[in-house]
Image 1 (cartoon, rainbow, N blue to C red):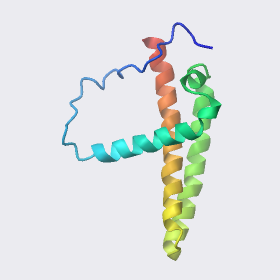
Image 2: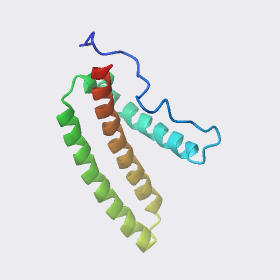
Image 3: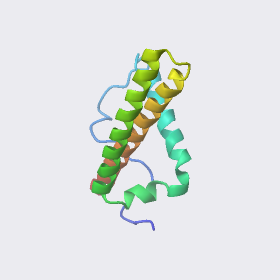
Image 4: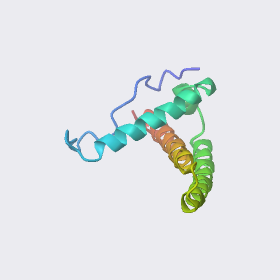
Length: 121
């Protein structure tokens, strides 16, 4: 179900290419690690489809899913807070849940950005 008007490869985001990327950026390792988590979450859901799935979806539906994931993040944060406050041994698992929910949100934000970028080529 490929749309011939939509490029198959990612485009350089407009506005980003003009920003300097510092090789010694203090935030780069964290951004890369989070990007790996995002890709891991996408890989877990690969059975639902790849880019052709979100690129042919309704951006409003993607935004709805982003909002649902935001609620899931809020729940995960509350669970993690309680476990950390109680000093529970599974606090690190709860913190991982928070990071995974945040990656879900980032993935839906990426899908929405890609949807619009693909159409203005």
